[in-house]
Length: 213
Image (cartoon, rainbow, N blue to C red; front, side):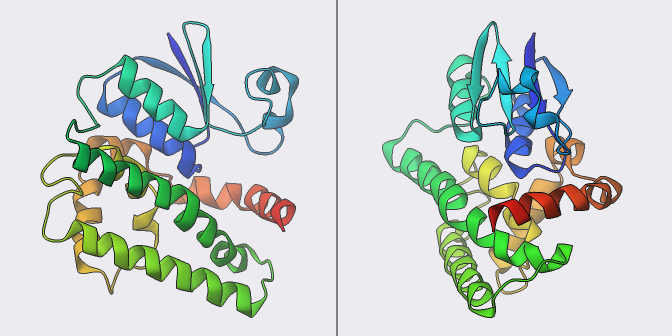
């Protein structure tokens, strides 16, 4: 059975978790506590980068969330989460990449004050500007559609949808409605991080953010 190394507060891990549930792939969840478990030899042997998520499937290890999603889509193609039309594929890939490369890093400075860490005002302003640019672009791409690819739920929803709803969306009515639709899915409800888990993880989050500064 596929082994899934995760932590419930990890956005990166949640993407994989959602896909496993959406595709109804049997898996063994293996909790990696972020208080040092990721540095133990047994996990380092699976992922030398010492971060989650990671999977081991029939002896094959795959790390990094987007690579894992591509693998799961290729090996377990039903139900499909990647469209077949070139234009639609481009939209999905674009949203995945922008979320991971642009939006997610920009949220880090915004998170620091929430855990009691200082951040220079110019860094906060730059991060907020980047977040605004991305959200405006996503709002435009979504248009009046149910999902980013018309009525088709895809990996664009999985990747963006596990991060965007945590941001203020009052100025983005289309994204807000889209986000609310996602929360109705069983996979979202099963993988949501409970407030108690987030509260308990705050000291570890602080340590991780301190390490990144």
